[in-house]
Image (cartoon, protein in one colour):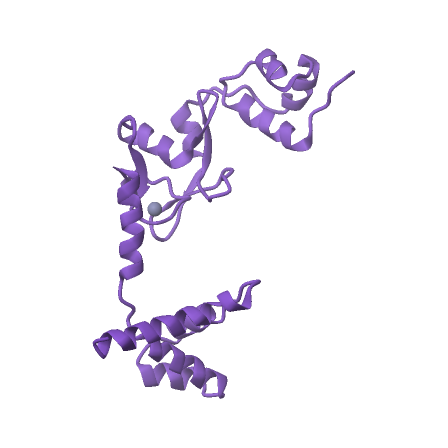
Length: 214
Ligand SMILES: [Zn+2]
C-alpha cells in the first residue's frame, strides 16, 4: 500500500529538509513513505547553504519594545520553535545558545521581558524553575496605580453614561489607559462566575480589609 503524507506533514518535511540536517532518505524512513514522495514534497525547497544563525535570524522581527518577535512556528504555549540539528527546540533557548553560551543542565532560560515569543538574547537569562515561579508571584503582587475600588467606580461611571473624557479627567489618567482598564474589567469567560469583574471586586474587598486592619 502506498502511504501518503498529510498537508501538515508536508510542511514539517519541508521545514526539516530546509534545515539541511536531513537527507531525503532519512525523511522517507522517518515518515514511512517512499523517497519519491519526499522528493515531491521538497522539490520546491532549495537545498540551503545558509548557516544556522542565518536561518535563525530570518525568523524574527524586532518590535517597539526591542523584543525579537518570533515569526516562525510556535508551540501551544506561545514559545517559538526552531529545528536545531534535526531536533525540535524552543527558539529562545536556541537564541541563548547561539548568542551567549551553552545552557547548563538543569537550568532554564527565562524571559526578562515576559514575552514568550521573544528571542532577543538581551532579554534572556539563566535561572531555575523556582526563580521563574517567584517572578510570577512578584508580578502579581505589584500594586496597581489605584485601589481596586476606584476601578469599580470608573466602570460604574461608564455604565451610567458618564463620558470617557470626564472619567479620565476625574481620575487624572489618560483616556487610553482608562479604555484598556475598562476592556479588561469587561472580559468574560464561558463560566460567568469567573468573569474578570469578580477579580476586581475580590481585590477591592481584600484591600478594604487590609486597610481596616482585619
Ligand atoms: Zn523581549
